[in-house]
Length: 87
Image: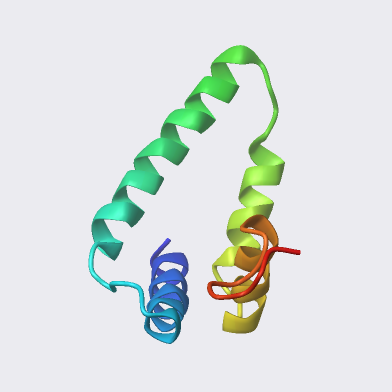
């Protein structure tokens, strides 16, 4: 978890600085994401949905994600990078 948090902090801080977003609030947002993820996993377990493999696979790749890969993923889900026209 510590490696995931540090990688996310490093990548998202760089992204925020590159695109002029505020850099504060990471720790609170990360803690909220942890709590939300735990709740989601518990709900999946109770409902019989086996989403653990997908969630844990995503976690494993994100904990070592390179900056350019993270940036590309953000561009995909937000229809481009800040300042670009939507594709």
